[in-house]
Image (cartoon, rainbow, N blue to C red; front, side, top):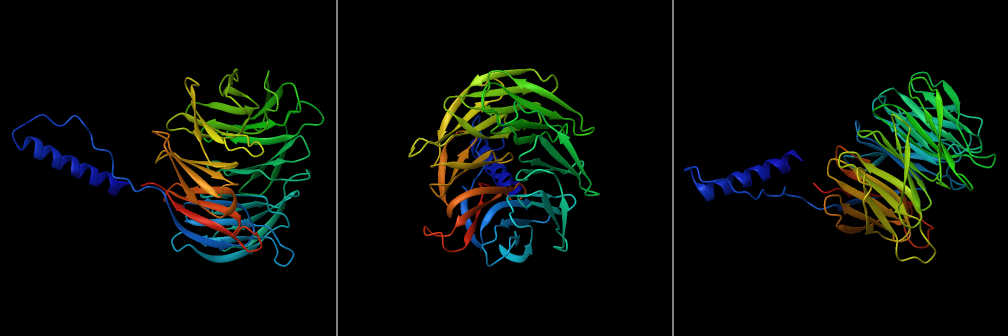
Length: 393
């Protein structure tokens, strides 16, 4: 980005000199846009059966969780971001389904789909298995690097696990559910306040959101009146301290400091949410309907809640935001593409990736997106792929 700005400033200076020479003529009123190279596919890497991907930007290492196939055990492929080469295969638990990296401690956390987690030392690739819950599955994991805590949902129980990254000690925190049949489904972490917001998948009526104080682990429950099925996803803007929870055709917006809520109609059913804190834009993926050709992402202004719709490919399965470049990436499972949305204009471009892509992670320092596709061809009999997309710069 610094080279881009330098070129832009040099061109601007040249235009000023050409227009006014040295005699104090007025400077031009039209500023030049920075020179930009559009996003493009940089490389394709063969991996086994990818079910998750994480990036450590500090070491420029990419970690791909691979499901076992009956011949090979479940593993994590370690990839050098400079060379795009696989440098190691690390054996992990039996059913990996989520992966996250702590860029400060250089530890990688891989949930195994049961009640345990594999911790990988990024310096040595050595591993340690820890028990994290009494639940039947742990498949959502996130890291708060500032306080070295790791968070994970416990499927099948109304609990949430908090891991101390220094000791691997685990605290089990109860969370609110609307009924006996409900369970926590997603959560959002506020990196500024360290609070955690846990949503639950309600089967009807109003749902509840559990707020966990990141320092004390004390909890409070917020009832989301009129927002059924609100548990699908949650996201936080740490700059505005607003929490967004999807709920069918409604969106709940919660003020983090007061826990007051309001709702907004956002059209047809919505699923995943992503936030660009720098621009205060909120992005919602549409819920895929069978044989639909109309999948899209809704772009909402976080201040006014005004929204517009931008088309994507078929069955959008994940969304990633690069705040510095203001680029939004939507991974489309059935299209085998990534829709690249320019956050300033909402214009889009489409890039091909592998077959059945579902997971993606961004290196915010190199502005490279890593997209994991479960299959390398339409027959899905070969290894999967990791597509490296160089973002606009």
